[in-house]
Length: 339
Ligand SMILES: [Zn+2]
Image: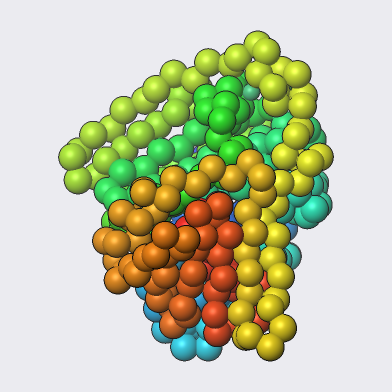
């Protein structure tokens, strides 16, 4: 009888030895949106020994257009994405170990989340958290595969600490939280782009797991499925890069995380961005105005999103009404205001 991995072990690039390495590995997928769910599906089918899956959010109906592991029932139940993903992945491959984490990725937990990983796969939706993941991965010598998509285009790149450039070499100011987010919520995303980028990321992850780092792409890849553009950009390591050159891990050490506070008696959560947060109020107004009715006075603007009234002050502080869960508040803030 052929094993379930027969089509993979017969590949000369993987073989039986590679399959054993895959089975012995831990792969971490951070963010379970379109990229993360597509990657988790491919990696579970490939037989990764331990899949650690982290996301702070719950499944909603707008996810089903592109987030391949989720079904209508998950959205109806508002299941945490990590738990919903594991529920489906267990039916795909019951032999592997799953470690679901429902939490906001922050300086206090990111090193624990990536610990022991052969490779980390990025399914995030913002550069602030990617910068944090970059610092954790460089610090601990863990390779990670960046992926992002928006509209009809996507980008991906593999960062191998000590060998290649890191995210900070390419985008030195990327750790600064910014607003507003050019995100799937405001710009949209074509489902097939996410599937393509995630497939590329998963292939890169498997190369690393089987020890074929020489096969990893040295370039950043860019694809636009509407304009039929496939291109690559060189990635150059910066010798004095603050992160991979000087090994300064400021985001990890100084913890510029979003703070939250529940407002007693008001059924609201206040979200306070760190001092480094850069707020472009005009851009926020314009971006939110594309999808919401925005009211404004000289001190703040107000809009209604996902059933909640939201007030944003000029310094980036926000109050989200009709909720008491800080994680849900951070999720809404990240989607519509910044992060
Ligand atoms: Zn660097």
